[in-house]
Amino acid sequence: MTTETHVLLATLLAALPWAETPSPLANLAIRGITADSRAVQPGTLFVAYRGVSVDGHRFIGDAVARGAAAVVGEAAPEDVGALPVPYIRVRDGREALAWLAAAWHGHPSQRMRVVGITGTDGKTTTTTLVSSVLSAAGEHVGVLTTIGATIGGQHFETAPHTTTPDALELQQYLRHMVEAGVTTAVLEVTSHGLAQHRVTGIAFDTAIVTNITHEHLDFHGTLENYRRAKAMLFEHLMNTPHKPNTPKVSILNADDSSFAYLRPIPAERYLTYAVEQPADVRAEQVRYDNSGTTVRVASPLGTFDVHTHLLGPFNVYNVLAAVAAGIAHGADIPAIQAGIEAVQRVKGRMEPVDMGQPFLVLIDFAHTPVSLEQALTAARAMTDGRVIVVFGSAGLRDRAKRGMMGRVAARLADLAVLTAEDPRTEDVNAIIAEIAAGAEAEGAEEGRDYVRIPDRAEAIAYAVAQAQPGDVVLTCGKGHEPTMCYGTTEYPWSEHDAVRAALQRLGFTAHQQPS
Figure (cartoon, one colour):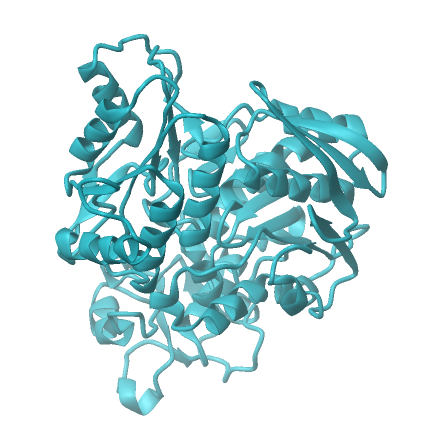
């Protein structure tokens, strides 16, 4: 539901990008839009679609009984039956909902520049860096990431485990941005958000990809389908309205396998970034020290150094993507340098927790084979001691990656503590067994190279207790997330609190950082 007084049904239907039979009551006043029949109030437009587990058409009768003024759905009218209100059939209910939501809120994305960032890993960090660079360049930026939305200095929490909100909520955020005077929106965009049309109807101007690797195959079925979903962001560029003096820009990782797939998609300008391959924005030299990373960047603006406080070689790519975005938006070198430097940390992304202990503890969101490998490789470079990692794999998600992650941990960690990560309705011990099988296939031995502790808080406490001076303890998979899902219930969870509690057990109490 929204707070708008009313919009004519004809106005809403005009936003649909395909021809529909006009409703005989097209001048009907609509006072809200929802796809949840329980939220229907008198005057609401109810949108029904066939979801992953529930068919919204089953609730049309309930919606009408609650006062729906009209219904939009995918089913044939004869299958819906006679209704006392107008019924408009569409080709895809989710797609229709997105366009209707955009129209309801006055197409806010057409009134500011919009940057979309997709990829398997690094989306949140890249979104944070890009928004910082554009802010340093003088743009008034609104941000939407996994961690939440930031608009006009205010922070709003988004739903757990969901990067891209549903279309109605997303358009409401965009409208809020316009009302707050935002000139550029920077959005983290997931494959689910693209495939389920949550971002359909948004006029993107700049599209950025971090990488595309093995993830979410439980939903997409194949890597090809997953890659195709990611490509939708770049297809939106030329298929949405152009804005004055705002070219449609595609920013691609020339080192990633996605490059050959995404480069043929039309755009008005292309910018590439890379560490290894030739690119418009390229890292010529990378230096690491205790304060972070310094990257010498060769670019269309010339060669210059940027310094980031963020840890890990993979963050070099995130920095390069942000440099490219700054160039695309006309930022100068000092603004790019200042924007990168200003990002002190990103919550739950290689984030250190320092309570005075003589070893390093890092919290990271890594939950894919590639991101786990990157995090462990970065941790290994930070110590001459041992690397101890705590991780699991989510239930009801991509099962194939479990063994792959076990193999990665066996290769790169000295000790892996296998534990829960949102098991949902699956048996956590069965999930851990699949990870363990991968580790053993790589030669790991239980009790020596890995242990199983299903309780995540106890797993973290165990890992911390094993650490010696100079070691690195890395907890992966939860990062910033505020809940842990067991069964169908989201229970409160804080990785930061769990780590601090584990350190306190050992007598470390110097709380030296915010959460």
